[in-house]
Amino acid sequence: MANNLMQSPIPASSHTAPQLSKIKQSITSISVPISKPNYSRYNKPYPYPYPYPYPYPYPYPSSGFTLRICCTTEEHNSDLLTDDAETIAFTKISIYQSLEGINRGVFGVTSSKKREIEGLVMKLEAKNPTPNPTQCLDKVSGCWKLIYSTITILGSKRTKLGLRDFINLGDFLQIINIDEGKAVNLIKFNASGLSLLNGQLTIQASFSIASPSRVNIKYDSSQIIPEQLMNLFKKNYELLLSIFNPEGWLEITYVDDTMRIGRDDKGNIFILERGTDDDS
Image 1 (cartoon, rainbow, N blue to C red):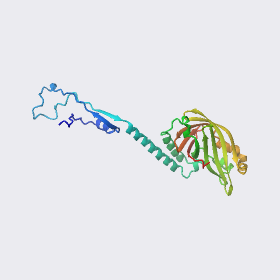
Image 2: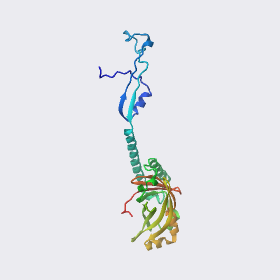
Image 3: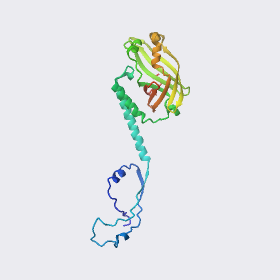
Image 4: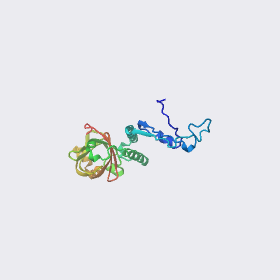
């Protein structure tokens, strides 16, 4: 029949089947050109008189046939993007779960917890959708809230700063103004039992682009408000600045619309989530 497509069978192979099964692209066309069979080498007329031994030497066409598959990669690329998005979403959920109950890591975490968080960070960095963040700084601009850092305040430092019982740490915010090349870090405090004594340490810094993913940061100025809070920190103000001073360089290893990860020249890791103007 004219509607029937006749072709020689493809011998089964342990290699052929798996390879064909892995083709995920959508098939747009198939052409199966079959060359004219050559039966002369069998020294037999065609068709063979039956009965004839089968399957060998049944005369498959000596020149075989060519299978040509024309595919598009659109579906395959879409699958990859979907896989990446799912991996990123799942990794973010895992990061938030790992950060529960550790107060941003500022007062230390166990070694196993630190390794767990860093492993998740590296997994997210491997899927960074913005590999050259300094070339599209609008992704970085705005308000960010710190949710984890390897910077810690331990032992005598914590005691001297009154951060064991008397003074509590509030939000850590960073506001980036790309037009002016400025970054403002806000560290909020409140004193236990003194509801009116809420304040913040403000650190002004400038940044300049050093590479497609790195910025250099220069400390400009700092202040603590209100004055009553400054009086509490006055004796150990330099210690406080040594902990939170951002000067150096920062590598932006991951950034999207809701999360940013950075690594600085001191080996610290920072994870921040997108904040709002109301946070500041």
